[in-house]
Image (spheres, rainbow, N blue to C red):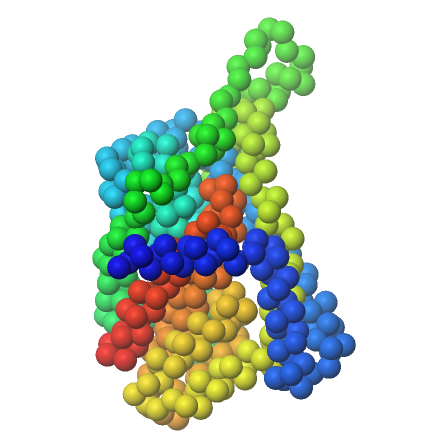
Amino acid sequence: MVQSLANFFTRIMQRWLPDAFLFAIILTFIVLFGGVFAADKSVNQMIDFWGDGVWNLLTFSMQALLTLVTGHVLAQTPLVNRGLRSIASLAKTPGQAIVLMTVIALICGWINWGFGLIASGLFAREIAQRVKGVHYPLLVAAAYSGMLIWHAGLSGTIPLKIAVADGDILGELLGGQSIPVSETIFSGPVLMISGLLILTVPIVYRLMMPAADQVTEIPDALRTTVVASHPVFAEMSPAERLENSMLVSLLLSAMGLYYLLGYFMDGGKLGLNSLNMIFLMLGLLLQKTPANYLRALNHAIGSTSGIVLQFPLYAGIMGMMVQSGLAVSISEWFVGISTAETFTLFTFLSAGVVNFFVPSGGGQWAIQAPIVIPAAEALGVPLNQAAMAVAFGDAWTNMVQPFWALPLLGIAGLGIKDIMGYCTVALLWSGLVMGLGMLFLF
C-alpha cells in the first residue's frame, strides 16, 4: 500500500511538478494574486512588497551557498571520505541503506539543520555508490527527512528564541518572560513526538522501495571524486610553491580553529556562520594545500548553480506574504476556530500552511507569535505548547517545500520532482504523528 501510494505521488510529481525555479516563479504569482483578491491590495502594492523583499535573504543566501560548497569540499578529503565509507558499510542491502540513511538524516537534522542537510546529502552519495540496487531518488528523499524535526532539535529557531526572550517578540508581549528549553526541546511530549518520528519514518521510507525493475541507481557522473594532484616541488615557481604549501593551510586553519575554540568556550552557539567556519577550516586542514582546496572547490561550486536565483524569489514571496497581511490572516483564521482542546492542533496546521510561503523559522515566528501568544493565554494553553505547535508545523511542510531541499539537491545532483513524490508520503505520515501529538500529548 505504501509503495503504491509512493508510486502514485511520484507519477504525479514527475508529470506535473515543474522545476524548482519555475515552481518559485509560479508561487510568486499565486501570492501576488492572493494579496490582490484576498487581502484587498493593489497589484502595484503587491509588486512593491515583492521588490522590497527580494534582497532580504542575501545574507542567508551567501551563508547557505558557503555551507553547501565548504561542506562538499570537506567531504572530498580522504579522512572524511573514509568516515563516510565506514558508516555506509553498515548497510548491506538496499533496504538497510534506506533505513540507515533516514535514521542518520533525522539524527543529524535534530542536532543542527544546516549540518544535517549537508551531511545527509554527502552520505546519500556515498551510500549509493556502495550499495548496489538502491533507488537513488528515494535515498535522497530519505536524506531530506531530517528537516522534519529540526525545529524540535538543538538548532530550533523558536525554542532557542523564546529561551532568551529579551528583545524578542515574546519578551515584548510578556515583559521579558522566557521559556527554558527544558519545557520545549527537552520536554516529554516534544521528545516523544521526535522519538516516534525517528522510529517510524525510516520504516515508511523502507516501505516505499520500488520494485527491482524500477530502481534508478546513482548516475555515473556523481560517482567521481576530486583527486588531489601532487606536482613536482622542484619544478614549481615560487608562487606555485606557496599554492602547494601545507604550511599555508596549516597556519590559516589553526587560526580559524583557535577562534572557534574561544567562541564556543564563551557560550557561542552552532549556527550557519560557525558551521561554515568549521567546514572551511577543517577542509583547508584536511585538503592539506590551498591548491588542493581550490581544485575541490571548483568541483563543488557547480552544485550551486541551480539555486542561486531561487533564494531572492522566496525572499520576495515572504515580503508579499508579510506586508500584505496574508500570513497574519491565515493564522488568525485557524486561531479563530480553535478551542482550548484543539488550539495546538490548529496552530500546528496554520504554521504548516504559512511555512509553505514563508520558509523561515524566525520569520514565521515573528508573524505568528503576536497572534498565537495572546490567544493561548486567553484559552489557558501553556505557552511552551503553543510555541512548539508553531515549530512542529514549520518543520512539517518542509517535506513539500523545495526551499530547504535546494542545498541537498545541489549535492545529490537531482531535481525536486525526483524526490517530491516520496516526500509527500512522508508528509502524510509525519502529519498524522505530529497531529495526534498535538491532540493527546500537548
